[in-house]
Image (cartoon, rainbow, N blue to C red; front, side, top):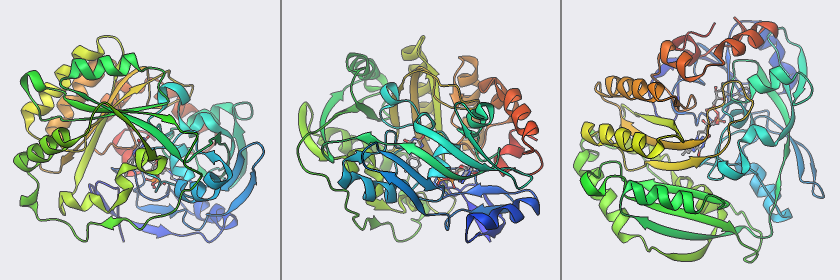
Amino acid sequence: MQVQGWGGYPAIEAQVHWPAQRSACAALVQAGSLIPRGLGRSYGDSASAPRVMQTDYLDHFIGFDPATGVLVVEAGVSLREILELVVPAGWCLAVSPGTSYVTVGGAIASDVHGKNHQVAGTFGQHVHWLTLLLGNGDVVTASNTEHADLFHATCGGMGLTGVVLTASLQLQRIQSSYLQRTTYKASCLDEAFALFEAHEQASYSVAWIDCLAQGKNMGRSLVKLAEPSVTGGLDFSLRQPLTVPMHLPEFCLNRWSIKAFNSVYFNAARANRTEPVPLRSYLYELDSIGHWNRIYGKAGFVQYQCVIPQADGLDNMRRLLAKISASGAGSFLAVLKQFGAENQNTLSFPMPGYTLALDFKWTPKVAPLCRALDQMISSIGGRVYLTKDALLDAASFRLMYPHWEKFEEVRAQYGAIGKFASAQSARLGLQ
Ligand SMILES: Cc1cc2nc3c(=O)[nH]c(=O)nc-3n(C[C@H](O)[C@H](O)[C@H](O)COP(=O)(O)OP(=O)(O)OC[C@H]3O[C@@H](n4cnc5c(N)ncnc54)[C@H](O)[C@@H]3O)c2cc1C
């Protein structure tokens, strides 16, 4: 069957295995090279390979202590399933990406970040320990103190060190499933940066940015901050999302339709007000539209997410936006966030600075554009996020992820080479 990431590009032919339980995984690993896969929410080819191990059936809850908020689960459990269980008990995930349709294994392998990186770090920083199936069929426990090198290579290691089977997570206490959200309108990039800097201690912050606006409006944004609420109750009920029923025809999405959408979205927003919103809708805004990726048509799209270091961040972000805006290829889903401190994980993405994520509908012009952006990003000491990537080349990867040799050493030490590989790892020149 064909496998592909959330962006739909590239699609590759694969043999897909669905082990029914943890004990069935070792034989599959020993039979030949493969890549583990969760819910396929990574955008490019990190969960694609000629042999794929789907973790759908590794979806058991193993233990939850409502007094301490320590949860032990199998790796195929989704963040959504966790929230349905723990929010009514007054707990929440400490770090969540922009969708809840992500497995624990996928969240660890990408070391995902949320809208609170500057205060909470990444997902891996809230993992007490994990168990990992190695290439020789052994299972080891890894944590900050046990097989620490393996733990730090696995968090952010894109499935290339082994298969995460189970994990122990530290949840965060909440008094309500609501947040108090304040929206500000920034008429240009300088104002957006100033808002982020003035609210550095905010519990959550994110900006929606119009990446097609030019001139004095370049970088105009809606900056959305949020603080935990103490009222509103504890509920995380599942709503059936509206779904985009099929791939939209190519002509629906073009520079003009995106520009029009961006203008309406920006102008219609109610600014300078604080209001209670369910954490579900602040943290996972896009989950309310099922299969929204189909709006890009059958050819799919590429999401480009990079981080720009703090020093000269505003100037460099201006240069980046100018390049994107001039290309005319920008999307209506551009997101700007501030990052806090880097962590110890070998290939983790965040570093102090600013991250921009946007979609490019797939056309042959996208590859050269991304290559030019990669060159700019690596020349200023930034990096591209591997879980979104479909195009990065080996030379740029090595510049952006200077600990890649250490990563390969740990993989060699634990027998991962020749056992765990993806279309992405081959492109990035990993063994
Ligand atoms: C709408 C949307 C919003 C998003 N927002 C954010 C965001 O705000 N922040 C952010 O950081 N990310 C974000 N993402 C990306 C997403 O969080 C990551 O790609 C995540 O890894 C996807 O998890 P998954 O279960 O779908 O894994 P997959 O996409 O199936 O796999 C991703 C990687 O994890 C590996 N993997 C999966 N399961 C295992 C396992 N059991 N053991 C070892 N490796 C495994 C795979 O090999 C692959 O390398 C977003 C994605 C979408 C679609």
